[in-house]
Amino acid sequence: MAEYSAFSLLKNAFNGNKDWKPAWRKPDPKASYDVIIIGGGGHGLSTAYYLAKEHGITNVAVLEKGWLGSGNVGRNTTAVRSNYLLPANTRFYEHSMKLWENLSHDLNYNVMFSQRGCLNLAHTPAQLDDYARRGNAMRHLGVDAELMTTAEIARLVPTLDVSGNARFPIVGGLMQRRAGTARHDAVAWGYARGADRRGVDIIENCEVTGFLRDGDRITGVSTTRGEIRARKVAVAVAGSTGQVMQLAGIETMPIESYVLQAFVTESLKPFIDTVLTFGMGHFYMSQSDKGGLVYGGDLDGYNSYAQRGSLPIVDEVMSEMLALFPGLARVRMLRSWGGVCDMSMDGSPIITTGPLPGMYLNCGWCYGGFKATPASGWCFAWTIAKDEPHDLNAPFTLDRFYSGLLIDDKGQGATPRLH
Amino acid sequence: MLITCPYCGPRDVIEFTYQGDGNRQRPQPASQDLDAWNAYVYERLNPAGDHNEIWQHSGGCRAHLKVVRNTLTHEISSAAFARGDHKSGARHKAEGKS
Image (cartoon, rainbow over all chains, first blue to last red; front, side):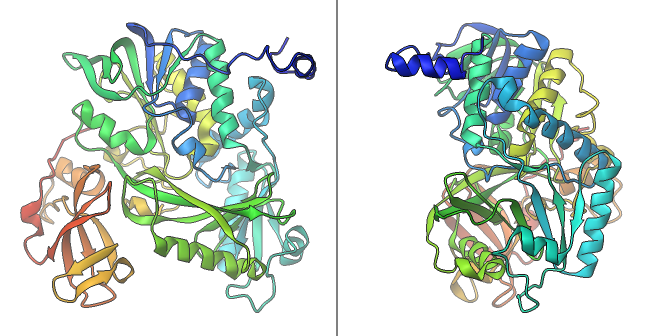
């Protein structure tokens, strides 16, 4: 029987909640493992979970330099969608969406996945044409998409300024109904528990300080808690990718690290029941189940590893919010924070074997890594277990920048801060 | 964040346009060295610490500046005209990865 169920809830309610086990153990690292995963974020934890569940590889350690969920898995704005233009991205993110749809059941852990839809607003006829093209590309690959008129949008989001007097009048939008949000902490905790129960060691406060090598081959890592050997070492460290790869002697990567800020307001009564994006700037918003509006915008526009942002972007994001929702002018912002994003050169991720023997690499998530969490782990686990990529992540190579097989969904070119 | 423009003095960051990594070395236009072009377009040092970068004072004198800025603290240790000499600061190795 599932560990968490109505019955176990009731039973524990009667005995003072004394029988709950911790969701994951706090083991000391062993001398060696079959697989080490560097990075205890969403992607590292889901990789460990699918290695154990799909491939039966349970002698696995996840090494996290801080505490579990302290990085980007707890810093994102929780949106989940698969509304991409290019086939490689659409197929990958749709696989992720299908895993999301069954995730709470699969993990026996409520990740509060809520398919409330994601609406991209169009502000010019040309932009609406572009959305029609993207919607058609999505539907061609079996993903749901529909164009919405201004009147339909006004019914769905009555608080939105749909008047012709708005700074950027709304002419329509592209809706993906199956998109939505999930509770990001629960995703980290659910995967951690699922991996732990299958025998994976999750080792927190364990920072990797170097790689053990036999010639070119990676044979383990040295950490703040001693040396740990492994047949396979997988790297899933998002914004810290460049730093970790430099420990392995790889000086440059097709990645720049930037800070992305996010914001939450005080709790409001139900205000918006979809994920909404602005088309004339970079702004996206949803409402959490607690009632706070969760929103964000552009990156701070220069390389940064500081997990905090600067004021010009705060000002810009608030201006965009008020351009859409003049009624929010008096609402108070509760918190803001920042996360370090691994911006790749074409805006698409890297999930691959290598670049050194014994090493596996998962990075380049830009600021869209949260929605990819299930498929990223699923594909990375496949790649680690079988020493070759699955069809779904075969396009996400590291050498595509050299070979020219880029996956540039936005058509932006090699300026990572603009993806 | 304030950047001290050598011509205008200390100014707010919103007056400046970030032009990215200043370590990159552009090959000669006629060069057919694919490794060098690949390194210039795609490969980055991306350090956590002092970073050589190019900024333009687009809201002021419009000069291009060579700035050394710490990516962990955002502290700026130098800002000078980039004119002519920013290549001398280049330490970007062509890795020749494939």
